[in-house]
Length: 181
Image (cartoon, rainbow, N blue to C red; front, side, top):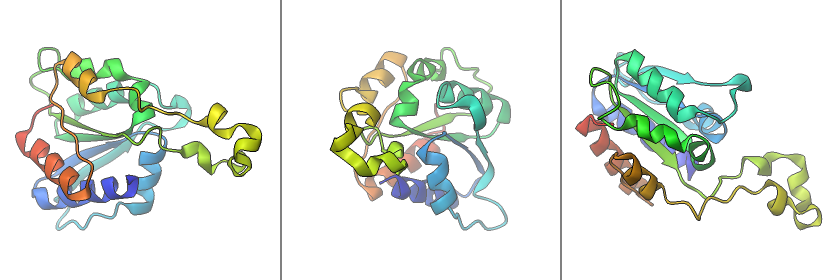
């Protein structure tokens, strides 16, 4: 679940033993972090900075914005983004390819919460009317026909996937240790 991903990121930051930076996407990641991310840091070791691109920006361009942020921060950065927001800037993955990303910049690990469109619109009052108003037809955002693995391969960047809390936490910690985009 989204809250478990948020918790795993917070715990991995804490266990890493060095300061990292977190960039949160609009939509559910920023809301989940606000509700569930309470890392226990000793002497501020786990997180150097948390940033978000909010306001009228919507979900367009989040990957590209996070890549620029990571490049300028000079700190290993993690982007936590939902699948729909990732699709709105999928070409931004190409900028993470080591052939294009400045070698002097800190790495950006991108965590895509791939949950078939999440469901942020289910929080709207109209959702309680369901099929009577065609809620899924007009407000659903299915992403199950898209392959993030193929997008990563096409962009020339590493990819891994996990479907359990412990599996995700292990994959994420391995990515942090590798220090690669």
